[in-house]
Amino acid sequence: MTVELSRRAALRRIAFVAAGVAVGSPLLSFPANAAGRAPDSDEIRKQIRKAQERNRRVLTGVPSKNGWEMEKIVDDHGHIYTRKVSGVPLDGVAMRMADVETVLVHVISRFHYEIDALRDGEVIGWRSPGSVRERLAESNLASGTAVRIRPGSYPSGAAGGFYPMEELVIRDILAECGGVVRWGGDDRVPDESLFYIDVPPNDERLTKVAAEIRAWTYAPGKGSGVLVDTLQPQRRKAAERLAALQG
Image 1 (tube, rainbow, N blue to C red):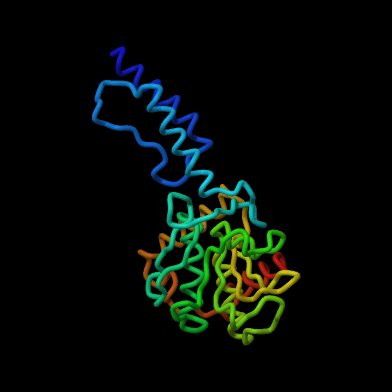
Image 2 (tube, rainbow, N blue to C red):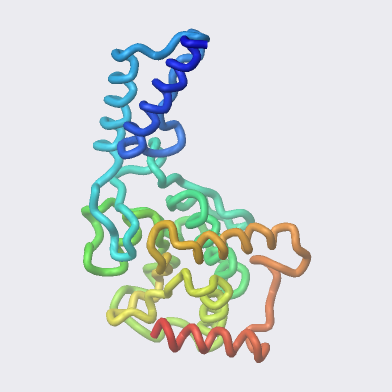
């Protein structure tokens, strides 16, 4: 009993110490081959050192414009990984996992099905922190919380790239996402290819919207790929109300 308690105490201590330094899903793991034996101090220091090294390799300590931390690399024990977009012929888009991924994938999918079919290479996700301007919304790319859709067709600084009916769909997508996504076309310097998360980390609104989108997977007539009537009065009213708030 004494040995087991000491092992639990050691694991708790490691968890608290590592909480501020560990990144991603593989965090800290300790050998299970020593059942009944507490990790020794050298093992604890080794694991904490590995987590700290991982943080230095991945994290910047600098937030993007929307408050999410920018990361230096992708697909390597951070929060940003290359993800597939079901039904859309893209090799993959680098974005922040979990709720952010769910929402941004939904935006991409609806664009593909309701505005124009996308081809591989037409959607850009994460970009390195040094390649974006920190004071602009494009910095959200570096935190994995934004995507550019056809940036070559809708260059930054230019407005009016979408036909009126296409913009109606964009407004409907934003309203369906409950205001947690913002379109760069509404920014002071328009960036019509840019769509980004517009709430800070741990915002309950993002969690709620992501859960709703996941639930639509199992609900007939819901989700991306199901054509909707964007001119339906209730949907138009919601879209116009959000446009007034975000404009």
